[in-house]
Image (cartoon, rainbow, N blue to C red; front, side):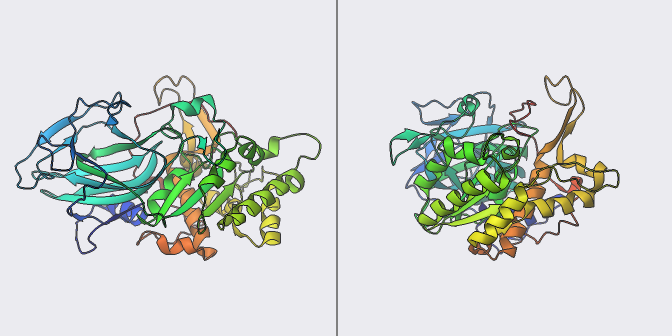
Length: 456
């Protein structure tokens, strides 16, 4: 979630940038005077007073407390300028990651980028490929500042000194750790300075509970809507706290203490979105079912969120890509979407019917075009990928982006208070008229792993 600081700035944009801006609503300006009240980093040869000087060889360590992640290669470029934050930057023709050791919480991040003697073109992501800035381009000689808000978390549940039971693979992700990690991607990212400040206490948290269709997917080519949607919200207003994890059912999400952790961080005025079903439907045993155990867990979720003074939002699980001979989607999720709809009605809770909207969207694309929204790639597309990928549940970044648009549509249809904090320019979306694949900009992140996420 970010915003450009000066709405009067006029920039000539390419067609693809216009599409990107509509989604990310980037608003930037000639950079303001940045404060020095927290973590400030200057990437030029002579650091501004109140800023820590960072050079390309500063690899991240816990002892240093900041630095480039291992494997990130950058070069420093110096420019003539009377302003200390315009006289240099770091860049590279491949993505690079910069981390800062920080406790959990919400942080407002300002990034100064651009080139006094050239142009720049950057995409910015946080933690595990969480999209914060879809694309920001500067003209010849421009240096600009932009801002977004990031949620950080660790595994400790401070209310009872226990921990979330994360899976072994999660220990290597850029979340559930003790640092903020920023990924700078794009055609020519030129980063001059970064300022990180704790957010105000009244920032609204949007908590996400879900499975692999919601989680911050750590590697290409997978993605989920929870890691795309942060760029749709205004900085300093909303922080998206994505607690989802691949392979989880609602019951396992609760038993692993993920929900307990979420509640421990929740306050009055926050929101909690819950979307499960894909893994729940495969559970067996006495008393297990959509209208029994699942419905009971949904009610428990609703009750506990309301006790915190927050607003629960139920989301039906999106369809799998499963077409019949007539090009219509076949329902593969059993009674689980119906159980969510019934619970929302009984408990008077906002409902985003992703199941119904995704059916409309997939059928609008048809069997052939819809493949581009899912992880379908021939063998050897990615390093070490010896066999073809044909996954009809999990999304590419383009597919996750489309699903995030359906969530935004649901926010607006339910007249949730969140709607007023959407970035200016985020358009209404008709699932019967989904975007074309070529309209979406997404340069691949450096981490790639073609192992299918848990769950299906």
